[in-house]
Amino acid sequence: MLKRVIILGVLAGVVASFIFQLVSYPQVRELYSVSYWSNLITVGDVMRMVHTQYVHEKAVEYDQLARASMEGMMRPLDRYSAYMRSRDFQTFEEQNRQSYVGIGIEIFVINSRVTIVTALDDGPAQEAGVVPGDQLVRVDDVNTENFSLNQINELLRGEAETSVRLRVYRPSLAETIDMEIPRRPVALTSVRDVVVSDDGIAYLRINRFGDNTPREFAETLDRLEQVGAHALIMDLRNNPGGLLRAAVGVADVYFDQGEKVVSTRGRTELQNSDYVSRTPERVNNLPLVVLINSGSASAAEIVAGALQDTGRAIIVGERSHGKASVQSLYAIRNGDGIRQTTAMYTMPSGRTIDVVGVVPDVVVPVDGDDYVKLNTQRRHAPYLEKDAFRREFGFDPISDVQRETAESILRSAILVGKFREVRAI
Image (spheres, rainbow, N blue to C red):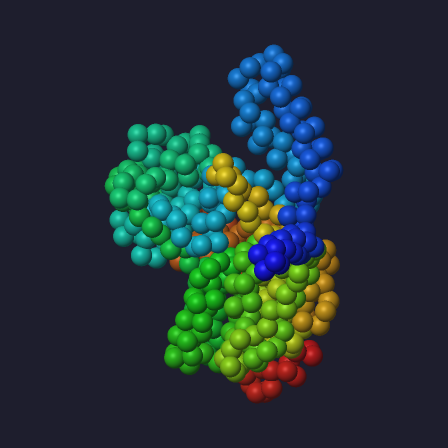
């Protein structure tokens, strides 16, 4: 009798667990869906017919057909969801981790020349003598003149502890230079261009929100405090976003413990979260201006919108991109990956910025061509004399009116000592 009771108890537990899984987890529930299996069989039938009957045999291997069907499956969802081939998936993960194996350079096409726009601090390329403005001529024995950026990046990649030979042309010296550079793990910094003016106004730019961004930001704030900064400009222009948790980690230092920074809502309970500040007390009370434009998206908008909602910063620039969706990343067993929208987020006030974006408190429009010029001079002007810069890029350095507006606002705030009142101008 006891044995029978135990068996019935175990069976009841198994049934209860099964029902709980069906109710709580849609992905489990779908495994028992007639619609799921009937459509899966249909997809398999079409794949088999194409594989066995399409005239060009090499074009219809099962792995090719499977990838094509998955790419097609993701395409109609929204512009932020996508199926990513292994190389793209790896690059995306590297950007979020802020680490990759390479030589530590960023390249861009300027005036039809592949130009090194960044040599990362303490990276192998910088240590070997590469400087921003160097033009890439050869990679190993390959002339890269007509190569795309993706093709060149493939040549530059490789295993750690291997090396690559570069030939670069340095316009400032009118010389061609050969160098051999080792590949190794390189940290991608996201908090860049940190400077402090003579009157104590600090400036920093965040180019993306990755795993290390909150730590980089906190360390930068500590250094700025040590050198006596009185106010801060946080530049989020053309920041495409990144990790939600990184955005919360950056904004967190301006919030009191328990204060809501952002909320997410999706189809499942796992996607429903209120992200609150975990700092015991507000770490930073410096007057703050955040710069945004139409290229500021996702995580960048979370930071700008949360600080605007709570009156912790003045937002200057142009309306942001308007992306209020959250993507989750899934690795596929073949090495590829899926980026899929799984939730939408709202600001502390409950507003959504989807489509409408974050509207600046002080609107300062800038022509699109001027953004290109500003990016070019940020990367190259520090390394070239004014005449050499003009010869190379065809224009004299221009004023950054949005940054100048931010500086003017902060100088007024410092003078009157009442930042909140300045927000009303």
